[in-house]
Figure 1 (cartoon, rainbow, N blue to C red):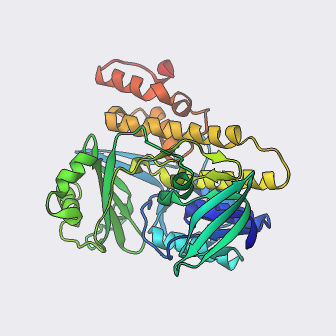
Figure 2: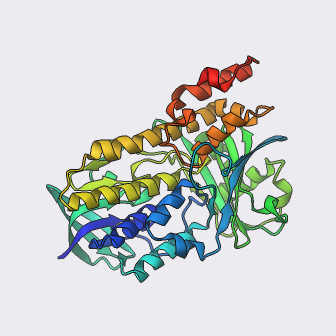
Figure 3: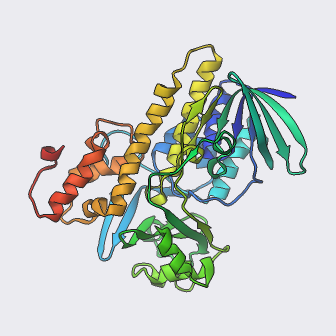
Length: 417
């Protein structure tokens, strides 16, 4: 039986930042990952807050050396109106850029760097059973050949993402409160990519209130294309032609991008992610914490997925380390309540995007630059900074402002805030 201080399930961004932090603290850790890397996964648009986590985990230099496409902001398109959010012009402090990344390359870089530093990572290895005795756990794992073994750990951090290992084994799943949406995406060789910023800019092309196309250019000449809509719309778009035809139809719906991508071929059969939003009944228990998409996944519209993964991954690692040192950790206050505050903010923004209220703020002209800077800070991932009224009062400010704009009422943001 193998014994470790902390077992980490999953080697995506959440697991990697947790492992990177703990490795620097000389904690005996083991990472198990069901997939073989490099592997294809969604989540290719980062937001600036994640840069803090990669830096603190000691992974930033290795990632910077790869030359990933810088992302200084994001562009939202609706018809002829374009709204550009510049991360360097936002409310409060924080990183003013991040990356657009092929996740296969990005995650592989992180795991290689961790292994170079001596972190034990077992790929093609799945956790198939777990028992807790207080905070100590006995995990049964199986490799690709079906060989089983046992790991004893003082703490388990579940960073398994869509695999949702502990939520399944411990029956922690619960329905998301968001309406069901689905996505179809693939990569294309961007043969018609324009020169300059236009060719590298990440864009969200709003085709209808609940239907939008993502365009994420990479530094390797390829671009990620995806359609997001309510699940019924996606199913109708598929028709009898399947996912490939559905994505081709989506491109045809975009006046802005139809010429650029009309004659490109998909690098792989488009992938359909159906009803992807998920939640759990609890984020932690005696001897474990659940992070990232294993914990809660909202919607890809504001690229919050990797941010919640790395935020929860590194925070759970810090708290678990303190607990190993004999400190009493209040997991409810320091972890669950903290993470929930950020989740609540982004949930509001996702909900108000699909009601159309947030789109009213994005596309109304003339722009209110003060409002835009405060919203930009949220889009950059700084959703725990309650000095920002668009964080602190998220539950009412968007709806109120949208109502006043739609009814042509004059106001100042200070009046509402």
